[in-house]
Length: 238
Ligand code: GLP
Image (cartoon, rainbow, N blue to C red; front, top):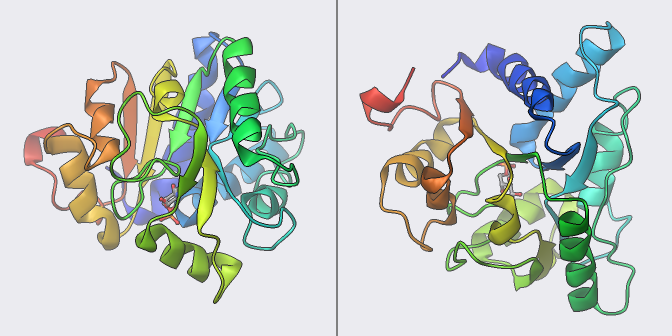
């Protein structure tokens, strides 16, 4: 747990440290407000020669089934926040310009396995315990697929640029593949995440809270600010 002001730096340190895993250069990376301090600090560090990201090949965790160039799309988000980091590689993304999103989901799943899986998955947590668009009800074996978005996720989307017309569906890397990453870095900040973080990390492991499956993974690094860590049992906080 870190003070809110140090959240981005702590997340960036873990992000860069995971490069030493050497399993593969592929990182699953996420969007959302939680990730903004991470990308800001990475940009500063690379600009000041205090870190390198040119050996990392990012794969998008998810994408809305909507126009790719809409300001609310994850494609637009990565263009704004990831691609401005010097030497950043283009993100392997779900391409929503395709005719059949189910085929696109399979293409992404096959792509990641062909690349020998992910070394690292950098994940946020939805207010409902979802991971990417693996909404509540997703099992640990859920594949990369097209999903119906929950009301909570659609409300988040509305606030993040989609306005009155958030997409009703999205494409997501499956938990099957995210949970196979050698290391998972989970980021959460703010009081609104406190309850779900405690449920995910200290509650029962089941599909009601997909993030609870992280408890079964052997190498999870969790970066929380003080507010997000508030409801966790003391023995889990350092
Ligand atoms: C939703 C998204 C996730 C994101 C999470 C947290 O569940 N599908 O990809 O990680 O929200 O978003 P935020 O960081 O904006 O709180």
